[in-house]
Amino acid sequence: MSSIGFLSSNFSRVIVNSPVNLEKKILLWTGLGHFSNHVGNYLTAALLIYLQTDIPLTHTEEGLLGSIPMLLLVLLSTGVGRIGDKYPYSKKHLIWTGTIGLGVFSIIMSFAATFIDLALATVILGISLSTYHPVAFAFINNMKNQDRNMGINSVFGNSGSAVTPLIAMFFAVLWNWRIAFLLFAVFQIVTGLLIWTFFPNTSELHENVMNTKNNEAKKEGVIKKNISILMLLVVLISAARAPVFRCISYFTTVVFSDAFAFTRVEASVLTAVVLGIGALGTYIMGQLNNRRISKGVSRNIRINFRVNSMFLSNGVATMLLVILVLIPHNLSLIVLGLYLILTFFFFLGAAILPTIMSEISPKDMGAAFGILFSGATLTGAIAPTVFGYLADTYNFGTSFLFLGIVAFLCLIFILLFKITYKRSVIV
Image (cartoon, rainbow, N blue to C red; front, side):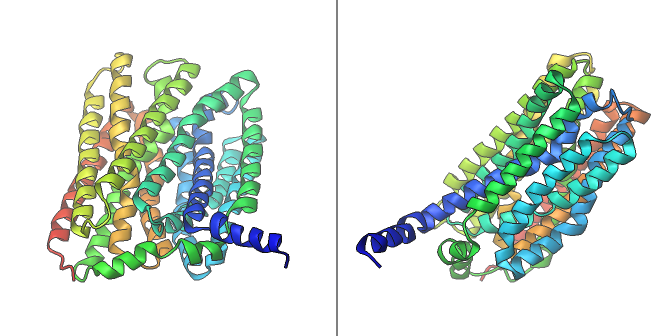
């Protein structure tokens, strides 16, 4: 090998493939995958107010279109996480194939003519969505700057939710909703191909980046008591948060259009603002968490800070959901202000739960995150249908009451987790 080739090879190995640069690469491409995942997940919701001009839908049917893919996630997420744990080299391929699958879903949606066609398309959506979260969260969990990176990754996802209504509205108004689905299909397929091409090899990541978190956990010791109860409570917290998260993300455009008398364009723009505020809240909490939980801080302090943050997030959200039940919907500007505050505080907790899970279950994180995600997805799958049915049968105030009750249950689970953790023995 020539001296130039030798230097070039060593430069690539030491600089380009250094742990720091590999961590940045994995954060970038998993973040883009998360952005794409949320775009696919909320594209139907963003275009419902335009789509229903050609295919009339009840609110219950709209909810079912949001529930079907989530139910498939329940069935598939844990299995996907186990595959990622058992075959580490499959993680990259699970992410990019799922992203391309989102493009296939959008193509099928663009040709739909009936509710049945739409429902069948969401089956492809559910399968495609299930390939991301368990394996991507397992990657990020083992990075050195886990808390910050988990927050940044969540911001990527929430940003996808936020910009989708705005871009979809632009395409739908400029052309029509079918063209909008086709254009998003091109984006998803190109994104999948980019991830396939540029995502670092899993072997490089395993050697240079992975296991940082696990090594630190071994030095600190493990939780020996009540771990099963703690794991169950984390899943219950996630499951109780999911209906609020899902319905805010999924139904906001329809609620603004049908309940608060905003125009379709206004509803799309305001939904983007609301979800953008949510993404900002997630980013802020990720940064605060990373700075507050500095190197050398004990697990007790880390978990207490995260649990207290979750309690604040859900406590404010519960109160505001009750207010939304009571306040007249014709006060649209006041309702919008409450909606913005509700979303900001609720989304503060979006990046925290995975880090709590990683503290109490440092091994087989793909499977653990699959269980966590499946628990949340089950309730998140049912919630849009219940929300829509209550709106059809009664009114949107009743739908918000349903979310308020669920959010209050989440507060109880958070409190039980705090009490149980204090009684656990750390060795």
